[in-house]
Image (cartoon, rainbow, N blue to C red; front, side, top):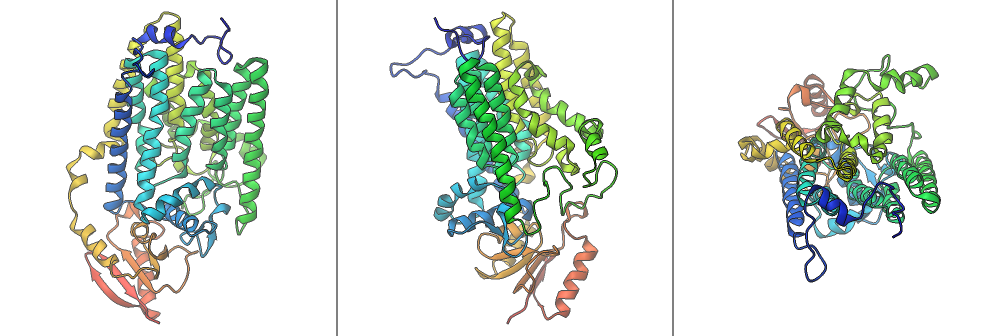
Amino acid sequence: MRAPTGNAAALPPQQTGTEVGTAPKPSAHGRPASDWWIWAMAGALFFAYMALSLRIHERLHSRSFDLGIFVQVVRSYASGQLPVSEVKGPDFPVLGDHFSPVLALLAPLYWLWPSVKVLLVAQAALVAGSVLPLAFWARRTVGSAAAAVIGTCYGLAWGIASGVSSDFHEWAFALPLLTLSLTALADGRLRAAAYWSLPLLLVKEDLGLTVAAIGLLIAWRGGPGGRRTGLLTAAAGLVGSALALLVLSSFHPGGFDGYFLSHNPGSGAADGPGNGSGGGAAELLHRFTLGLITPQEKVTTLILVLAPTLFLALRSPLVLVALPSVLWRLASTYPDHWGTGYHYSLLLMPVVFVAFADALRLRGARGRGPYRYLAGSAAVTMLLLPHFPLWQLVQPATWKDDPHVVAAHRVMDRIPDGARVQASTYLLPHLADRTSVSLFGWGDSRPDPEWIIVDTTVAPHLRWPQSAIQESIALDRARSQGYRIEVQQDGLVLLNRRS
């Protein structure tokens, strides 16, 4: 019998499945009879993600950065134009901000349902869909019981919850591609691993480094035949990122400046030692040495990334695929990159959970029972669950109708379709699919809008880009320039200047 080409320690599915659990028997049609529960699990997660993100949006908690930007991008593609975003600036070319042409795939959905909500539903489907290749592969290799635990823990993982609850991001497209590529690599299907990784180049400019990492693993594990495939894949990843940066430089009005390693414009974070945007040799040395573990928040995030796998993911070389994403985040000077919030850990979850399943397979092959690791993974996942956004689904407040939200939608309905608008950050996403809207108080917004709408009740710690005092001054200035009050109720102010 010919030895597997991708992993010298890999065993045929019928052997590895019996080490951990009983592999399902095939049906008369050649498919395992127990497939239904994997589809049901993915379906349940889809509805959970969709419900969470839609309720966050409906309660006025989605933001102009990033949901408002992305719906304007998809609107552009749906109109047959290169993507622009009024949120970033008048006719701002978004390909100068991030290279994500994959978003054009959402244009047909937007034709059918021209709403910002289509992005949230699509994201829920993409993230839930990434459970399928992971669970199917885990069932074949470590058994049905283990696959159920791994799939559930992945679907409920805190990094997934944080990403799904943070508006919409192009990284959602990367999750199914990553799970398909990594499970193929673990199975020894080297060409399939390479083919599934290459579309990542169309998701975002930094993912070429992830493609390169996958290529190097293919070269390392694949023998002479796989070495060529792996090196070509790695080269394609590096060249793809380089070309994407050239595209960004040519489209960006001020030239691309290494966005994912430098201070994020508009973050409001102050420059300082270890937090500046300078690129001196001493600072770069600090950022890629001691700066990778300081402040302590970075170490905490790394621990939480690996904790749901009881750190067993470190036993699989597949975990190295996470290294590019981890390094640029920890070396970044933007503090939000270091923590557990927003979408920044979304890409890490498929990697660590496929690595977890791979490590369980290898331990099973050596005769060590994995059930304590599965029980531990489930326990950690459940302990973390109440501290992250999926827990909102069981909170009564999530499902209550807020009179302020009802009033906000009633006021926004007074703005006609196609109007030029400036809106505060939590109202903007609700107008981005039917008006030309930019951000009130943002220096690069399109001037002289027909309408201005502001929610003055936002809590101080959630305000951006203006404080309450700055916002009040800006509203007074607008009134002095000829805008009149159309509506002022429940903390909502709607101004209009008719031409």
